[in-house]
Length: 217
Image 1 (cartoon, one colour):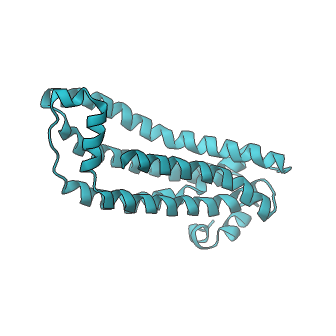
Image 2: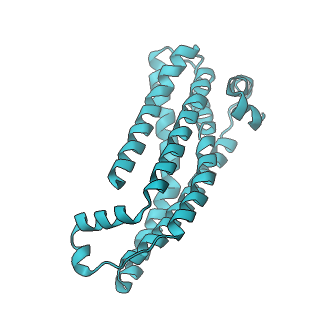
């Protein structure tokens, strides 16, 4: 197995790997690394935004932060399982053949772009957020969710939002490429059918990212 081939020649990577017994060790480590980096990213953003709240409320937010970090660690594994399940089911409609373990394995390798994307996004976000001036909200402002949302939107630099969004889209397109070849060899499909199967989760991820940035504008 050659990770370089996964990046530069995914067709060869998955074709060669399909002749070996399925193993979830490396895909698990890839998704785990993505989860840890995502949790670190969320922790940093929360530390910045926590200054919006009065000191007596900040201590209570630490409990919410701990729960959010745990959710962040687990959510990537849930997404991995859901995407693999979705592609496995759709490929069955195209007479796909192959075990779910193989689908799960090859789908997990498809999250490598997320790891690389986070390694780029985290320092960019740290740079922008470290220079942000954070006001302290009054109790009256905190009681109005619309006001809180407007203040948060005004604080987060638009350049950071657009930059991270473009990186996220590039990551999703890269996911799409890897999942296309992955599901092709995991389920013994031709390239056209594999393209259609991988397109479904790709569209769902794109809509999710688009909705997320619209909420922040």
